[in-house]
Image 1 (cartoon, rainbow, N blue to C red):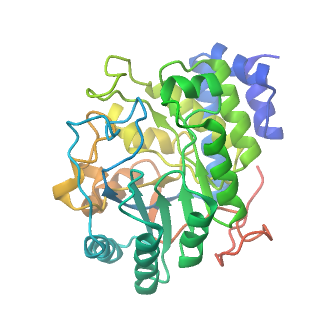
Image 2: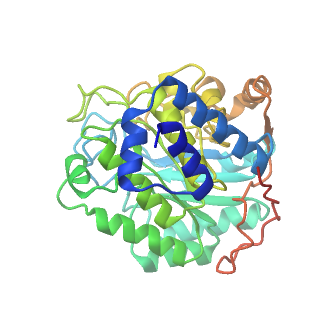
Length: 366
């Protein structure tokens, strides 16, 4: 079967065999890449129209107990600038974002023991009581089920935990021995069980990545069936063991975004800051490849340069929440519009296991 036929099969059936994924990833050419991206864009438009959902990103701590080899805030990086936002700081960010039109806030940080379950519970309840019409997403790493339950019962709606790679040998290349790929996957399954809208994802072009490891990523994501999927290019950080490794590429990232949209048509799929970092029109190209979420930065300007997961990370221009008008203009130029509602995943209410009350989103067929 030729590559175009395999892309059609993925669109029709939502899956490929491992061998077929490897063939699509390893043997596609420029023509078949564009074919997949165009098809993914049509799928996005049929389900979500021309709506692009914005999330206000609040990077509230740069402390992390982990030592992942690719990350600029890893605990062994003594050159990293550390900070923690107070609850008041976080609420001020939410207030600014709400006034700008944001109806989803994303609290992201390293795995920082300072923010105990009790402290996070208080912060979550404060945000949800002040902004009951807003969705709250957490991205704070691997926790035990009891902690996730506290977050959920306090009012958190969504949780992002990129699995980074589903292949065990590849995972071992990227992480120290104390971290486990199975534990990370179990965390994602637990989050789904507790009723979170759950997000996973992987780095594109990370050291050691192959078509075979990518096939495992797609297989895992199909099994998990997350409401959100976040992928972006690997970008090296100068103070990590991978400082001299090449970055992930634009063309790979756009192609894998398209494959994800075809495999998981209702997924919420961000055009990430990392994608905007490697190309001036990275976010627009991501949207034109099937993405439908953008997360401008709501963090205080004084700390944005300190949350440096990778070199050259953008925090100004269209990446900054206060420049929302620029972002709106850029999306309008490609026929899309920024939407300021909470933008839940299509089909969320139709799943009886889910507890959140969200608007119905009618899925059309192509």
